[in-house]
Image (cartoon, rainbow, N blue to C red; front, side, top):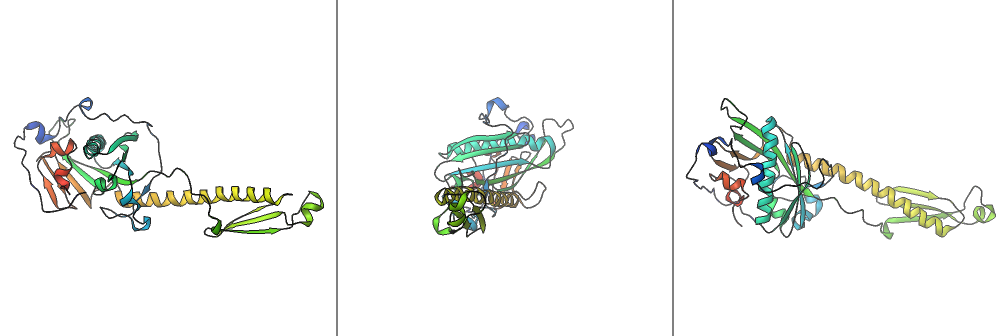
Length: 294
């Protein structure tokens, strides 16, 4: 959707005191409403382990083809101003998504942390440059001595959790029958009514003993499905956590993706090598000013 291109410069023309300090941004009520549907909820998502525009190779291009993504924005160094910038960047992302023909809403929010869901054709392409560390430089409204502050937030872009694990495939299951044991009479003890079912990819094995082989097969498959699903859930959670950490790189400075310098009214994308002096328009959702148009 976007190309890196050459460095783009644009002049704002009227850098008044409010722009230079960044201290008096638009009041919260004047920005795009961000009404969260589930305050404080923690949800596990699948994140690419590769920073920048390249999708995670382990997913076979599912990030490029994704029509629905989640954008995780977390505060880092910088105290209260870092938390405030999380809210401001989330608002800019919502406006940017909607101006790009995408739907955007807040999934979860708490102090210094906001998660957005963005859906529509080209959702991943629109946000593929956002993962990483974003630096905000300005004089906060709470700064009485006019000192310049530098704060940091981290952004990760991933996929929403799947609705449920896929059903087990017959070719992945090995079934053995044998004579049952325990109470149940001669029918159970002398016929192959017990079932041992093994999931070949994971090695999980279930043994069900009972009078009816058909009932035992159904129960074995149900139990096996539940155990494999739990293994897959744990694996996806571990991979998602690793991918999220790889994208965000922690909450400290270094390896920054973009700098928002309110004092000089400039936004610089260090990964793309682009910059613009129209920071107020960028914060109103016109990210193409620094990303470029594809």
